[in-house]
Length: 436
Ligand code: URA
Image (tube, rainbow, N blue to C red; front, side, top):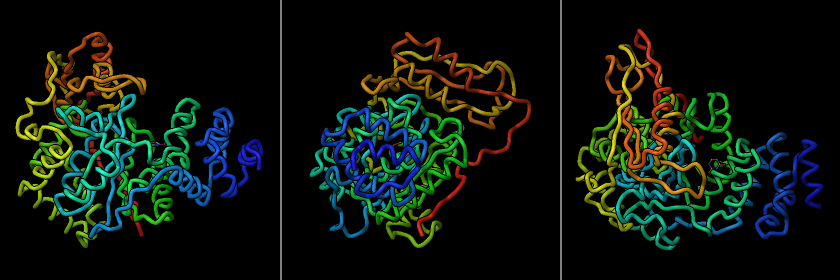
């Protein structure tokens, strides 16, 4: 079938054959089908969607555009974790060493931050010397050796996704469930996972703003992952306010270490432990979530989770002493506080303006090519439900470059809503969609 006819079929709402989907992906990767035709195809999918069979074929075609890491020789299944992204979401930095300290094998290929959301790679690179650019052979060896490696996307894995994602980004076709599912699941299968725990964020600071849309995405991710042979569990978690207190890069490493040490903010601990417990279940390390929770807590109390983090940092060329001395991490030279204009209770904190404020200070990037300042940050001092006096700090901005400070302050101020009574407690884990 000609590319034109494939586009027309989808535009008219018809189901595409596997041959058509494969021909399109292969032709695009090989440079035989131009961007303008694939753009039209993506827009047709955006409006007409795809059923499960088409989504699985698309995912498989993206996987087959590159190589797949094989962890089948390991004594227990390789279990991955993926978050759809949020503000202050540093759970990968906690969950990966914690899960590995329980004997799980955790291959983790992560991304960089864009816009108001941060990225695991940028956070890891704030650790002096940390190398996220391992070869696939080194990646595999490290996962087999110490249980975990944290790296960036390589050119060999799912190259079609990189090309398709870049095109979606400039054609307003990112927000399509089958396209998101194929993009995420292809990378997880290629990374070698046989089990996968998904953290699908929902709320004003998330990619999916409503519970219904987050549920639809989570269910489609679980179904597609299972149809491709993985065991998948999804948690839908709240992204109304930033997760934890730290938003930035080196500050998020500091806060992750606090959680691995047994402290840290309650919301971050709750979500991180819930995700790690689901991984323990999929890896066969526990028979129930309760048992998994006990094992994880023991590993934290014994110091094993923190020691695993030191091991991973050292294995990837980083300075493991940052775990015990956060002064070794990049720190900003200036700070400025945003104070409460009145006495009251924090009713809500919008994650998106806090993420944007951190970005304007240098913690994130507006365009894919932009650089970042690992030290720039926003520390959220008061969380939803806390009482505050007039003039008390709501958050602290940390920066080296003050060129966009005024804008950042205005955004941070706009994020906080204060009221006269204590609001209802925020539910952090809203739903669980389990692998059958
Ligand atoms: N994350 C991905 O990796 N792909 C998408 O399409 C959306 C979020």
